[in-house]
Length: 63
Image 1: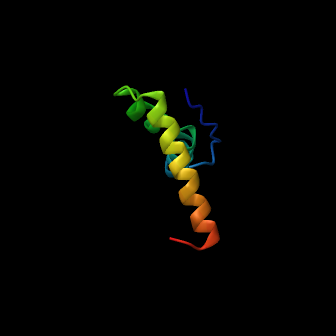
Image 2 (image 1 turned 90 degrees about the horizontal axis):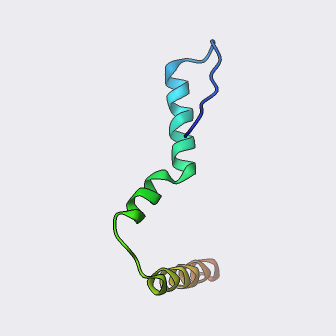
Image 3 (image 1 turned 45 degrees about the vertical axis):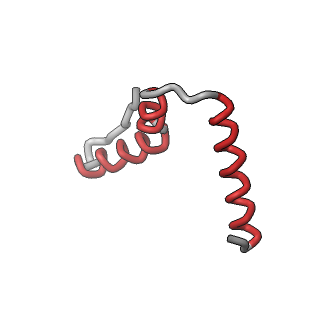
């Protein structure tokens, strides 16, 4: 559960902005989408490796 600490001087828009940031940072939607269907551990590991290779190529300047 996300807790948003607001002061009396904070507006509703400010509180919503803070909530959205915390919600995104917590990764709740990612987790919900991941739990909708089962993914084999080998596929999860493969995607992690491919993502790491992609990031490494970006840092090197290759495509």
